[in-house]
Length: 214
Image (tube, rainbow, N blue to C red; front, side, top):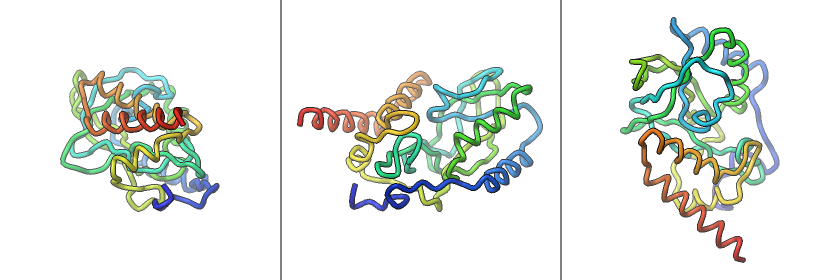
């Protein structure tokens, strides 16, 4: 852990200004296509969306992959002990997740809730992407993807290093280990198995057992 480049100085957390967050929201909303508001979930939004919705559906985002390639210094880690968070990156594979169609009457509140949750630091960028769903045909949804130029972007790491980072990392929304396990569980419900994630969880759990035995 000491050999890694941490996202910030120890004890520091950097948020977007209120003005910058609002500017990004306004730009995203201005680019929204006509039709219902759909949001794509690939991580914790799958099991805890935090908003009411009209319907949900399994969906595939082509050309993007789910990766633990960003630092989390609030949600499932701290500036002193950061964990790893999920993001979407362009790749050769695809990402299967869940799309939610939001309730029109709750859209204003839901925009605010989404921005508070996903755009706190600005590590994500937004795009409107077409997704193939199981029941709803092709829909255009709001997608949060990684900003590779952001200070919280870490990129690929050896699996053993990732496990070392995740062990003991805990933040506002719980343990980094449980975040990984919850993602694996939700992916399994969609028929998706990621051997890399499963092996990573085994490494994290084995390290936690070793620490408990010390």
